[in-house]
Length: 354
Ligand SMILES: *Cc1c(COP(=O)(O)O)cnc(C)c1O
Image 1 (cartoon, rainbow, N blue to C red):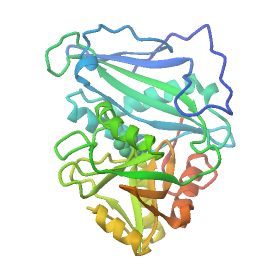
Image 2 (cartoon, rainbow, N blue to C red):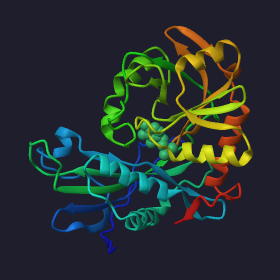
Image 3 (cartoon, helix red, strand yellow):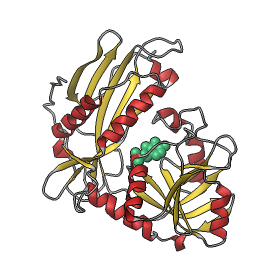
């Protein structure tokens, strides 16, 4: 792939790296590439970060034909820059594209584009462990037509955002709320695809949870409202009687997280029993009542491992593991973040140097 460079002459003043938060600041450049039926993907370029000029009739604004990905670049103690299993994200990108009638991308070209934009703005990557450069690739449909139809033209973009440690004061258990009214995804829908529409439809439930003082929603399946799907925008794991259980992916309503897959692989290498299956909310609540629910946690690129301290079921509060991080959550967090920041040997071969 031939990438054209148009570098900025006005580099931004960097924000205070002690107050980065998540996704608030963006770097000096962005990667862009266009698609048309005639030319395929073309005009790969790295240009100054800035607003996009789009026709108000663009398909993405009206019918949400779009997709996105999320991953991070990490700086190690010896100055290396590395990615964590980037091909997993790129493969998922093409599975999302397939579901959204968006053309496939060349995985090697996308990896090259990610490396190129990260190298261009490498001076933005935080040096401190726990902080990283969040990478947000996305594709939007750009046909300026109001008919409901897959677009013939697309824009692929990659933007970068330096982000802080997800938990400013170390890793803290979150309070979550079981959502029985709204659903996030249904079988046959787009739950397994990483698309904005899933998030738009989750806002109402999330807002409700937040108004009650809860950080995240525990989503149940859209048909029977009986089985656990995900927690907020993370995959979810429960440890019952020493067995780690996470909802299986085969119904198509769960996002196949890279952190989820890595968690399962690590547990297997450690000899900790881990099962992917349908998991009814009643089974979890019964285990909680009987004191057999040892710990629970969410997994995702942003927070890595997010322990669950409280589960609210229509006002009945279940406190998990004394509202403290459990041993399995802690070990997973330490190992995954250690591999990512290069302080734990990557025996799994998961990191890719930029
Ligand atoms: C991105 C995402 C996840 C986590 O996936 P990772 O690859 O681990 O970051 C989980 N659930 C939803 C709905 C997501 O969008």
